[in-house]
Amino acid sequence: MNTHDFGAGPVPAHRHMKGCGWVADTAHVDATAYVGPHATVTDYAVVSGYAWVTDSATVTDYAVVADRTAVAA
Image 1 (cartoon, rainbow, N blue to C red):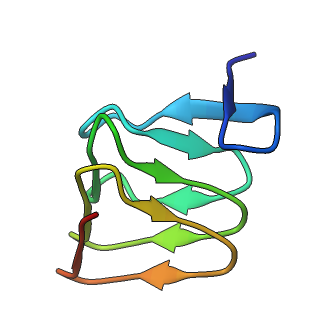
Image 2 (image 1 turned 60 degrees about the vertical axis):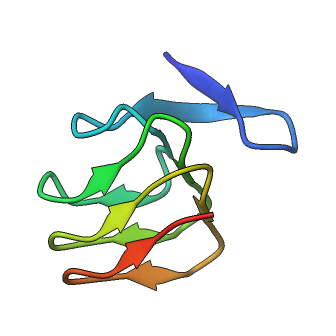
């Protein structure tokens, strides 16, 4: 089992296939979405469609990023 520390200790997580960013196993990211190598999706967040999470952005809590939205930090 892979884990990643999103800031409150390690939790079960995996690298997303498009961009290799970390995604908590409790979150959902569509296969069509992009999570950059320094970006994270944690808690119960959802990234769907062709959304992009780039730079060092974090999508957290119950946030939803959908369609062709881009989130950057």
